[in-house]
Length: 175
Image (tube, rainbow, N blue to C red):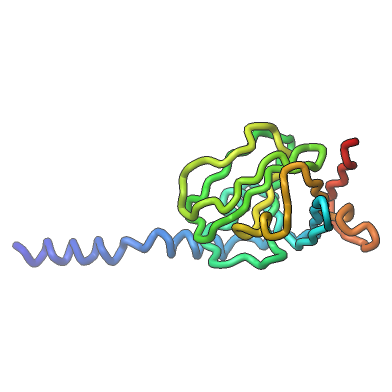
């Protein structure tokens, strides 16, 4: 009588995959995201990045989950079309991130700095935004990026280069 119970338990354990491994392999199978030039005009300098674009709902849902690192000049951009009040969390995100919430005029409304990996605490600017940019945790402070700095991407970020994309964001500075 004990033997069938042990077999059933063994089969159940064998069928239960590690949820992180399952989710991780699912994110690997996703369609590749587009790369886009992005610049942030700070008080003292222009900071340049090449960012992934999470354009589809599936890409936005996965975001940077399960990533073990992020390049210093890399990141992920989450366009919001139409603009909306966005709220992000760090579920299944292994590394700290800086979340930059970008207004429709291109200025940074709020920086969620060094967000805590795996946290389910929502991070939001509390105002409608055109996009959210995620950078490696602490990177905004390292580069002197602050709320109010201007962000541009696509062909607007590199006007002297020919960038083939429909994702151009060319706000002008507010006077």
